[in-house]
Amino acid sequence: MDTAKTLLNKYLESIRDPKAAAALFADDGILELPYLSSLGPTTGAQGPAAIEKFIAGLLDKVPDFKFKDVQILIDTPTQVFGEYSVEALVPSTGNVYKQMYAGRLVAANGKIKLLRESLDTVAAQKAFTAAG
Image: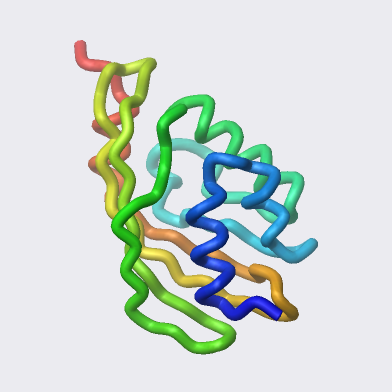
């Protein structure tokens, strides 16, 4: 059975394949980005189908979205905390989305129960706002 660290690494590596990334979540698993509320109504998703749709929507906005520079800071069999970054063009604005994420993953029965990610909302807002 996959540990929390293994699940996080699989998720980060498969982010460009929404179906594969979403399949790592339990039926009631949650992908949560609580600090995104300032950028719109969607702050996450629950269940593999909703998570797949959420990730696909992100890739529609940032086609080259890919995690890099992964650092695992806390690692237990059922929980892991790490930092990882993204640097990719947002075609609709011409801005670069440069972001550092901090993620806490909780695992149960070899699936992701919760992945809560925090990020710099100011950097996100700048990347997704057209100059003008």
